[in-house]
Length: 401
Image (cartoon, rainbow, N blue to C red; front, top):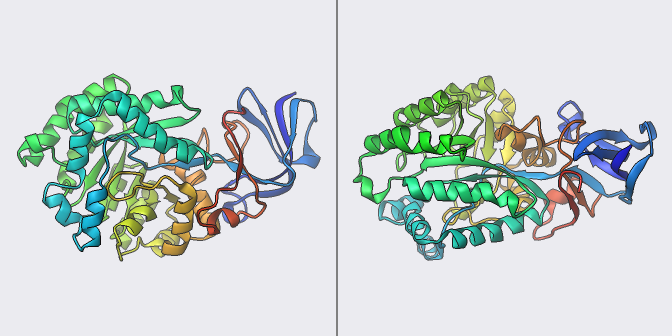
């Protein structure tokens, strides 16, 4: 007997072994028990109609709950002034080198109370939940000292007690140089390795480790040392790679079998090949591309050619992508990067789950997975991608409820 049975649904199972990966099933049914999917397929093949509750979807499209696999949701303040400066011609790098950018968010985050940081994160999280998001990754990186990084990660860990959401946390201490480090990048990386990372891992605050590998960030050698330390602690890694230049970030991520490499505007063919061999997901972030008015697009065709799975995410952050809409992100992925509808939907479900190491738990409508669903007031998957500023969510289901 099912706890809940949804019938008369158009299922997009997002199974990888179906045409285009959408796994469309007309006249579909989905049953759950104890928060897990126990049936997803044609209604005609249902083993039983017995259910404590049966819900008629009236032909609506049902997808897995959406997954935002790259965000920086916990931070203080805003950077609207920098937006004005960019409108006047200042570049992201110029603002960062002048002490703005990430460091201005660091100052605001350090000054904010825990309650203020939590409230700001919840406002952004609620916007994503309202569009059917059931799983989210949240990075630190706006503290850059032990106390604030720990506080931000603890707040991220606390959000599932306040909202029905699955949160994966990522330590991004190697996001920028804190002002008190005096420009000593090697010394700061040493401190991350010796002090911050072991303590955060010991406290259970970290699922993965990330770094910003760029000329204005950290070198491949510095990132490599940090990733080796993460590996020794049994933590998976992710990488902000090849966003502003090609330092070989994609290949570096692949060398450590990273869950994902993200941004990737300057990734070359060697990097794409390395990612394919390692199974590293390419997380594309069109919000940052749009907001910073970049012109170099990530090499989507290279990723297709070499079989690199592509995810999409908001990169929700105060400076380069103040975006809290995964639906708009899909539209941007299609219009700016020329991704297909199937690629966009896989990018916020199946591939996003893989980018967080959660493919066994969520991302597709398959037996055994968490019953996290988005039920939409549409029938065609393309409607979720082509509309702008339109939210057709009918019902969000979290672990069957």
